[in-house]
Image (cartoon, rainbow, N blue to C red; front, side, top):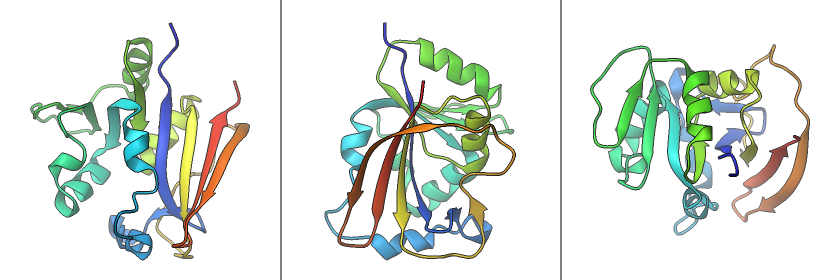
Length: 179
């Protein structure tokens, strides 16, 4: 049986930030275009589990709506320090991220999507658990905010898969973890 893979599908500024100060994601609007989802729907067809940090979850809930994550087609794990009751297919998970991911990877199913935030991503990187990096570069230099990749994590070598460019100026890079 093939192990499930974890994929990162995320956008960042050219200078490496996934959010402006105060978890502000408004810079993503720079590349919004009617009918263009930058491969998001095609990507989410390959997954049936989503892992997301609580701050990212709260932002999306407020600005996009609940159905963006819990659309009834996948299990959602919100990584949090505060216990909350399960809601639909959304579990507020307070245990070890490492244990959760190891369990999910060993179960049958489609792949796993990590939608951030930076704390969750960097915890996964620390244990070399991200298999695919699909990173959209937004043509803006933010200067500060939340960095996608924090310092002091192990070095990792990646294999190039593909690059896509879009007329909005967004460039999407896809790398796979070298096994």
